[in-house]
Every structure is written in C-alpha cells, then in structure tokens.
Length: 202
View 1 (cartoon, rainbow, N blue to C red):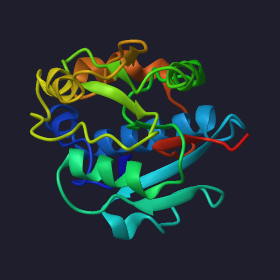
View 2: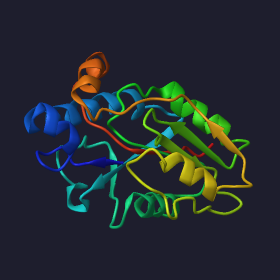
View 3: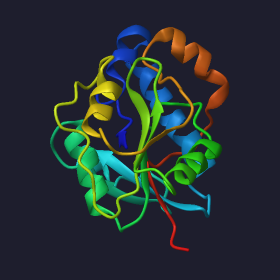
C-alpha cells in the first residue's frame, strides 16, 4: 500500500520536519528501492495498491507493475478490501515507507502463514508494518475499532483475533521524523514500488 509520492499527498509528518521536497523525494526513493528488492521475486506476485485511486494508472509506477486503487475508508477498511479483492491464498500487506524491509521478511511471513491464521511485523511505535492473513477456510476481519496511527494499533488488532493462531516477523520502524530519515539513507535506491504481495500459484 502506498500513497502517490507527490508533494502534499504523502509523508506529511516527515515533511513538517524536513520539507515537502525532501519528504516527497524520500517517498519516491523508498518505493523505488522496495520494488527493486521485492517486485521481481518469483515466490510471490507483487501488487501496488495506490491512494488516491486515480494515481493507480500513473506513469510514475513501473510499466510491469500490477496496480489497483485502495478505495475509500480508513486504513482498516482499505486493507480489508484488498484482502477480499485478491485471489484466494495467503496475502501479506506492507507499506512503502519502511526502508529496512527485505525479501527475507516477506518469505518468513508466508512461511508462518502455512500454519498460522495471521502474521504481523510489529513497528517500533506500537503499530505494525506488515499484516498477513491465510484467508482460509474463511477471511477474518481483524480491523474493527482499531486505533490507527498510535501505540495501540497492534494491540487492538490482536484483540480482534483472539482465539486464532498468530505469528510474528521482525520489528522494524517507518520513517516519520528527521532522525529516522537520516538513519534510513543507506537503504533506498532509485526505482518505484508495490505494496501488497500474494503468494504465487504453485
């Protein structure tokens, strides 16, 4: 999942500290680096879920990327829509502003979904940078009444999954401050990215 990396539309908290131009450049660079690491991996199909929807067909994304709009609603409603809309099987959702994500994290999440109902990548701030569901025998609905953008997001989501088996991958941090931006510099490169990844058939 990603917001279109245009000035004023993405990384607003970061822009307040380092300026809109630098924050937009970061959004583009981080997305480019992530697609370079994940987008060509044959173990899964990568889908770029874009907000606002009309940017889904923008030429800023690689021509080879499968894209879709996220639709309306809060973050939970949009993630639930992605989980419902894609073909059956395990699906993992990530954002594009976590430069430390590697293919090994995604592979670990899919391995866990072989035996767990859900998997999370906890974030340093109390949220999560990755959520995945096995989506069988039925699609769970873990996002009701979650307090987003705060320290309770993971706790609230786990409460909605009481009684289900849960797995965890590495704890990582996103980039929403000038200090996090400075520390992220070694991670990102120059091309453009996707956000949801689904295990390929076979």
